[in-house]
Length: 180
Image (cartoon, rainbow, N blue to C red; front, top):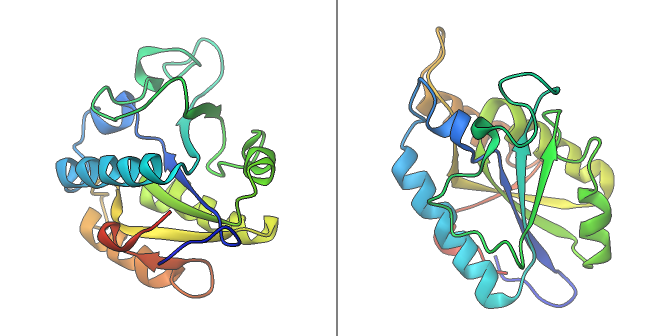
């Protein structure tokens, strides 16, 4: 997973926010996922790659209104407010209604490493949308998570999406192998 000047890669961290990660249900392997995301941040920062962090928000007055406690990024994330781009979104697709596509284009990015949560919603949707914008998504297979549902365990959801998205929608990479 080497990158070069002609193959510039950015890091996109999806919805690693208090209301999802520390809500009523614990995310599958949350501590490991958070540690892997912080490893990705360190790698991107060392390489000078752009880092983008999406926060899922809802309408004003809702529990996830922009700026509410539930939409705040996890304090454990190694975010640099001076250098990283934090933005709000209201849809599962990180590109819809945001400036993300333009920011990536302005930075000369052609590949985007995607990590975060929830696997079956915003991570999946963003991986599927990226190629339509001319981007190559790299799903970091050991850096995204979700919670158990009434019909599937979280580990099965993660495994299913790694398998389903690999190839037609994204390239898979492990945290240890991602380069910026």
